[in-house]
Amino acid sequence: MCGIFGYIGRKEALPFLIEGLKKLEYRGYDSAGVATIKGGKIQLSKCVGKISFLEDKLAQKPLTGKIGIGHTRWATHGQPSDENSHPHQDCKSELAVVHNGIIENYQELKIQLSGRGHRFLSSTDTEVLAHLIEENYQGDLLSAVRKTIETVRGTYAMAVISKSDPKKIVVARSGSPLIIGLGENELFLSSDIPAMLKYTSRVIYLENGELAVMTPGGVKVFDLKGKEIAKEIDLISWDPESAEKGGYAHFMLKEIHEQPNAIRKTIAGRIQPDSHKIHFDELTMTKEEMRTINRVVFTACGTSWHAGLIGEYLFEQFARLPTEVEYAAEFRYRHPIIDKNTLVIAITQSGETADTLGAVWEARAQGAKTIAICNVVGSTIARESDGVIYTNAGPEIGVASTKAFTTQLTVIYLLALLFGKVREIISESEATKLIQDLIEIPDKLEKVLLGEEGIAKIAGKFYQATNSLYLGRGKGFPIALEGALKLKEVSYIHAEGYPAAEMKHGPIALIDKNMPVVILAFAGRRYEKVLGNIEEVKARGGQVIAIATEGDDAIARQADEVLYIPNTTEALSPLLAAVPLQIFAYYIALKRGCHVDQPRNLAKSVTVE
Ligand code: AGP
Figure 1 (spheres, rainbow, N blue to C red):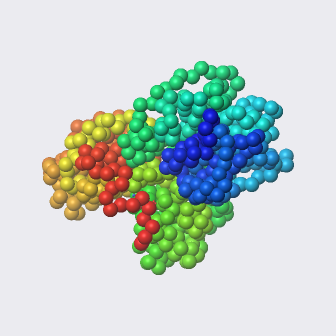
Figure 2: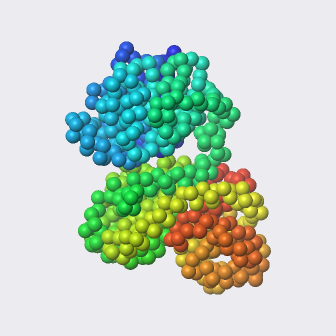
Figure 3: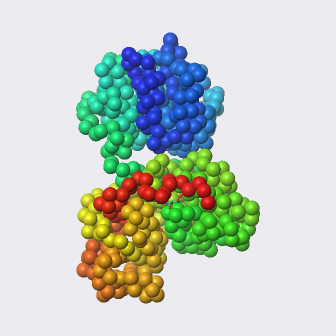
C-alpha cells in the first residue's frame, strides 16, 4: 500500500505535496518522491527513506511549479532505493508517474518494452506504466493513459503529468483508492481523504475503471471508453484525526477490516487465473531444491509464532514433511540439529525482530536453507534470508497484529500446497480445489466482519473479567493461543490459550462462573471432542463463548454465546476463526479504556533480544 498525492492550482505545488505525503506516511514510508512542471520542464526529486529525507534533499534543491504529484512508498516489487522510488519517468524524462497498486503482468510488459528499445532504471512494476504512456502518447495524455490501462493487469491508482501537456494531471483508478479534492481554483488528488481534508471537504471518489483530467479550471471524469461521466461531489464530515484511520476509531479496527483486501493482495499475482498454478515471484528456490528438503522448521515470535503452528499442520497435511515450530529466542541458542536438507521458515511482520533475525543467522550458520515470510520489503530479514515471500498486507500500524497474521496464514497455506504439489503428495485436482477454497476466503471474511456489532455486544458482557481461558484442538489450538494473546496485549486481562484436551490435566481447576472460556469449535475432525470440553466447562459453572461454523445450531444449546464463521475447508477455518477473536479483544479493550493501538509496555517491532 503506498500513498499518492497531487496538486494543481494557482499556488506553488511543493508545500502541498510534502504536507499531503506526510499525512499519507502511515500508508508507506520506505521511500518518497515528488515531480512538478515549470517552464515546460519536469522537475523531479526522490529518495529512499522517510519523507523527512526528501525534505532535506528539497531544502538543497527545491522544485517549483503550480502542478505536481508525489508518492510515499510501501515497496512490493523492488527493494526500497533511490531508483525504485516514485515518480518514475519515460526514456526522455518528458512525463512522470506515481502509482499505488500492483501491475501483475509487469514482467512480460517490461520484456516487450525493452525489446522495443526502452531503457529501465528501476526494478519496480510501476516503471512500465511510464514507458507505456510514452509509447501511447500521440498528443493527448488522457488517451495515452487510457490505451496503457488496456494492456496492464492488476491494481492501480495512478497520477501522470507530462511536459507535453503541462496544464493537467491525468489520474486513473482500479483496485486502489483515489480521491479528488475540489478547492477554490485548485484541485487535489490523494489516496486517502486525510491528506487533503485541511484544504477542502468537497471530494469526488474515483471508482474502478474511471479516469479523470484535472486542470486549474476543474475536473472531468471518463470511463475506459473515453465517455465523460457525471460525478457527485461528496462533503466530508470527518475530523482530520479520525480520517487518518479511514474513519475508523483505531488503526487496529481499520486493519481488522482491511483483511479481506489484504488477503486479495497477498494472493494477487501468485495464482495463475486459468491453471491455478502457484508462483512466488520473489522466491528463488527451484523445484529441484524443494525436493531436497526433508524437514521444515518454522521460527518466529508472538503472533507470527502462532502462524508457524498452523504452518506445522498444513505442511504435514499437504506436503507430508516433518515440521516443527520453534520460538526464535529458543531456537537460536539451542544448537539445533539442522542441515542443508532442512528448510527454516522465519515468519515476521516487521522483518526486524531481533530474535527471529538471530534464528535465521543460526540456521544459515548450520547450512539450512532459509525463507522469510515478511510484510516489509527490504527489511533486514528479507536481506538476510536465502529467500523471502512478502505478505503484501500494507503497513500494519496497530501494535496488535491482525492483517499480518491472516496474510501470513495465506502465504503459508499456498507454500504448503506448492510443496505438496512439487513432492507429488497432492494431485492437480486436489490443489485446484484447495486453491479455490482460498480464493473464496476474502468474501467469507467480509461476512465475518458484518458480525462486528454482535461481537461487540458479547464483549460488553465479559470486559470486567480478570482471567480467561481459550481452548482449541488441532488447528483450533494455535487460534486459541492467538485469541488469548490478542486479549492480553490490548485489554490487559490475563488470558491463557490451551489445548482443549489438556483441560483435565490441571486448568479445569480454574473454572468457575467468573472465568469466561472461549472455545474454538468450528467444523473439523475433532468437533465431537470439543463438544465434550464445552460440557466439562459448563458442568463447573464456567461461561462458554464458542467459535462455530455457520449452520451448527446444536452448539447454541450448549454454549452461552456463539460467534459463527462461514463454512470452509478445515485447513482455512483458523484464518476465519482468528477474526472474531480480534474483534472480541478490540471491543473488550475499548470498554476497559485501554490504548488499543499502543498498549502499555509493547512496541510494534521488538528489535532487542
Ligand atoms: C502480536 O500482536 C504482537 N504485536 C507480537 O506478538 C508480535 O507478533 C511479535 O512481536 C512478532 O513481531 P514480528 O511479526 O514483527 O516479528
